[in-house]
Amino acid sequence: VEFTQRFDGLSVNSMADLILPRERLELALTRITDAQREALEKAAQRVRSYHEKQKQDSWSYTEADGTVLGQKVTPLDRAGLYVPGGKASYPSSVLMNAIPAKVAGVGEVVMVVPTPRGEINELV
Image (cartoon, rainbow, N blue to C red):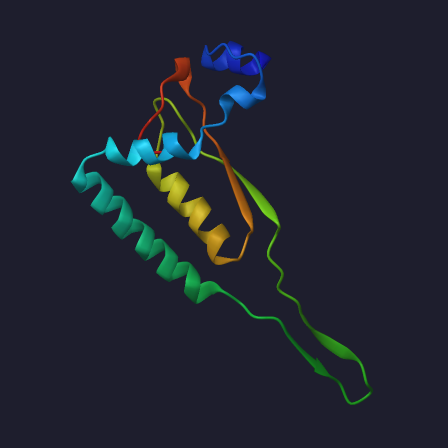
């Protein structure tokens, strides 16, 4: 809370005040242009397609002497993402971090974005 005040110029009472409810996120989609939404959706599809091809499966085999060797691929339970805000605010940072996490099977993705003076970039 202290650093949010110092660096973002935003005064809040608690960390809970910084969480955007789903309704606010859905509202952001209505505030961008159709062209912006189409561009984001196309980019998201391309990022998803690329990372689907990178997915790996677990595998193992047993050597003649009984030794079991292999690789176990297990997604994280949750991942935290930092997306730059303010002057350097890029929607591509959201796509390039959140989509690979979801493709990998991460259960919960949490994103933090600085909001200078409380200004929310609808594209992020």
